[in-house]
Image (tube, rainbow, N blue to C red):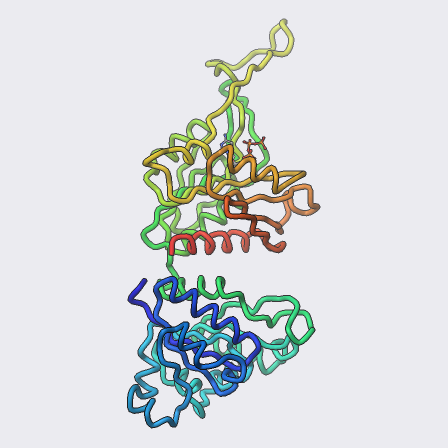
Length: 396
Ligand code: CTP
């Protein structure tokens, strides 16, 4: 990525201070930053801070003879792989949506032939105003990419959508855009999903109610980011997501063998509800209702797929992720599970919260050795997309 460069337009809003942190993160990730600071932006951050962090000159004046002589605005608009506007104020969005070109930032946006990513930041009423929403729709139709805004308490004392996305989220969006939206291209991923089914005899089995939805959504989200995904699935009623290689299995042992056959891989996400035990000896023929009463079914422990992949030595995927559905002490249990299984992250959720089991929403926490990241309650499909994006960040 070190040969990549962004043109960062810093607009005039209180969130401009976060553009400094974004610049630092970009440089740390090896991305070149050429800043354009608008007149209003310069009321919030100084050219000197921006220039020092970017390790480049700050451009701000369309009519500066020296700037134009060094690098004309047309050249400037094309000198990067991506144009990022952060913060994208209501004013900058309006100018860009209407093709105005009265200053360096808007002229650059009109003159560029590179993709544009905007991180809007404004008061909630300005964001919700019909004019801004119209401009947003126009910009989207023009192919402009967006990250955020977030919802939350704002500097103006109000609450709602309009707060600029946090710098790590903007960085992730930039990296995805720089990679053509496929930051996991060339990475191999294994996802386990669904239940396993453990036969008692040729017609009976022990299984569970896992639908496989979350695992399938994660396989799809990883594939959408360019990963080469093998979905090892227990019996489900779901269709394989497009672009995903599905391997159908029934038992835990088959699931483990299919995962091992899919190695080497960079990523493993174990979402399957694997049966912890299987009937001891598989009866070759159907158990009959004899006079001896109900048969006793002895159980033996199944292999732990997550733990096996986590300790696969040279063949261990670089990032191994497990799931933990808990009903109490969620984060403590997840931390214990992380240590016991030897994986890198545990995606923990509290299934005692009404509407989680079988519902469409989920509130998860990502537990790792580095700490706990708590995510707000969101749709399960969104959890999958956020997790895939979070995984992609890990590979940048
Ligand atoms: N898992 C697995 N193989 C198993 C059991 C579990 O790969 N045989 C994986 C699951 O896919 C999940 C994680 O381990 O990612 C946690 O599963 P869970 O059932 O919560 O863990 P257990 O070890 O069974 O712990 P407990 O039932 O005591 O909570």
